[in-house]
Length: 118
Image (cartoon, rainbow, N blue to C red):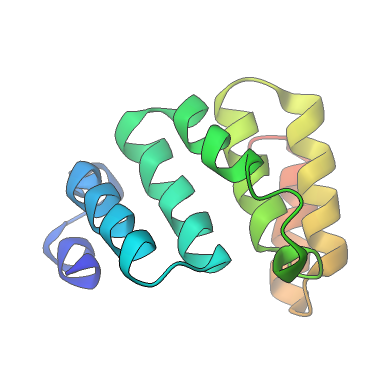
């Protein structure tokens, strides 16, 4: 269902983020996991605003299964940038760059850290 919502949209702006947020909420109840919660934070941020997405992401900051992955700091950085909290966003993008094992991602994350909004 989530993939179908993305596939139907011609662009990110045309995506039914409210439906996707609802699907992630249902998935979080049926099969809870930190990665589902990170994705739910993204969807909620797109559907209801970055503050709501950041609240979900912030609740994951002490999740041990996410401490060695770039996923959470990348999402937090994006949401913080959307809220205009650029110093915090840059710090998150730098942290994500340190954690990723993908060189292309590292370059993109460091670029976002340099400009704060990518």
